[in-house]
Image (cartoon, rainbow, N blue to C red):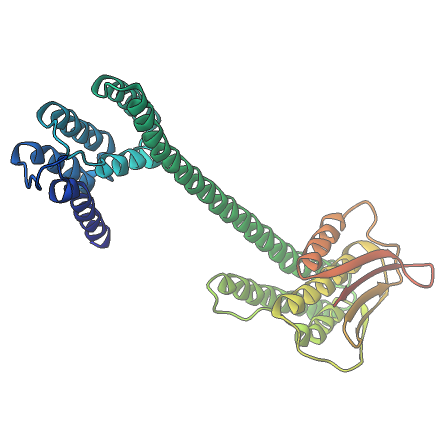
Length: 352
């Protein structure tokens, strides 16, 4: 409705501008000539198509061209209007019409200007005016297409980032849970006959890990609907205790004065610890791991070290790549390598 009212207002303005010569033009040495009904109806014919130019730009331009031609044949007096209506329609043709329709309109406009206008100077002036209208429409169309392409690219990048984030979450959640469950299943199977009580505890741990993984999956899916909170720094001690049930000795330490951090930073730190502990359980052959949070004046350092032989060639590489991507996205940096004692593996991130 608003667009229709805008077009109606524009059509009325165009009509008034094109009517001005009939109201104010005087012949040399004569009084005001007043209205010329015979020459005025073509003016109406060139103004009304402004209302339909959005829906049928080519047809609207053709109708207005008929009005211009009719005026040239009928009226030869001093009342020579400037064709604002057809110029607006020509701009719209350049802005939104298809390529073939634009080409036909340009050819028709050039031929019409050459055939209707006798003077070469007048023809050049008219062609320059119409060319300016077409150039403005082309510029507006180019800017609109560039903006649409930019929006599409931004939407595609956002979708890719979201897919990457979901893939990282699934990898972190399921990889950690399955690793602990596999370790417990192997341990339970090994002592099933010799120590039934220990085997039962191992299978209970498997069940607990499965339930916790389901809970985290629900939380991750709920986060897609902006309903469920994501893990934070406060959940790291529970993550450490859960890993300890696999039989790995894990120590946790936090130093410095804790402060609030953005949710994406807290989630990145949590996922780093989760993935690092998963790699320790799956690949390192370690008996001990140390998790530390060190708060500095402007930064948080998160470190996971073990006494094993590192991720090795059998896995962990994809997880380390995911860690680096997640931490970098949260504005942090990651370093991986041999632990401080020359044995084991170390993953450290700094968020500032």
